[in-house]
Length: 81
Image (cartoon, rainbow, N blue to C red; front, side, top):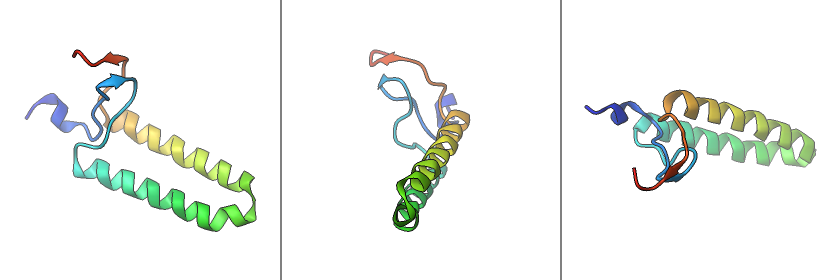
């Protein structure tokens, strides 16, 4: 098993950040994130956009923290690596 096999989110080929998940755990995290975001839109947007903005910001911060912890270390890539 190579070192990259343990990462839930591999680094993007071009740019900075992570690509689509490479392991089932990453897919679960991504699907849960999307479902929670959609649910927040359904239930919080009728109450006002401020609530949804705060909710989506918190949810996104948690998602990025998971990607940072379980993903390949990010750095700028030009696609030739």
